[in-house]
Amino acid sequence: MSVRVGIGYDSHRYASGRKLRLGGVTIPHTHGLAGHSDGDAVLHAIIDALLGATALGDIGTYFPDNDPKWKDADSAFLVKETVDAVKAGKWAVHQVDVTVVLERPKLAPHIGQMRAATARALGIAMEHVSIKAKTNEGMGWIGRNEGVGCVAVATVKPAGS
Image (cartoon, rainbow, N blue to C red; front, side, top):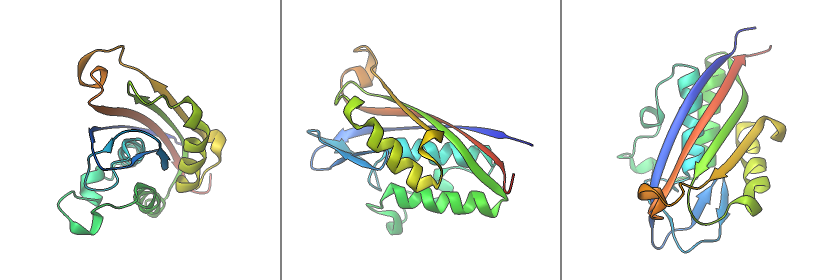
């Protein structure tokens, strides 16, 4: 069986007047994330990881930030569209692993919900979704609590295997 691996990265700055969406879940916080869609950096990093694993391009290829169609879009819907593209290429999503880097808010109380929502969007079992949170130890733009960064790894396998 052939397995392919993709890496995705996304970051967004905090913005007033928006809800904080991470991993398909609304997290209580003073700010949300700036973005053309809902700004869900976790799901955006996963999208790029899946597209990388299948050599289908990047998130901007499918959901350009200058297309009004995607304005304020729910990133879980974007993930489902990406999974459809992966399936059309004769691949199946196997697993994702995400590291979220932020100072605040603390994500530990929300990780289970984030994993479950992400698994639903991907159409895979929750035990194939890992989401971890780390701080940047006060360093750089993340350390100054200006935004969130995410790194994702995804594996895909041939459909039907």
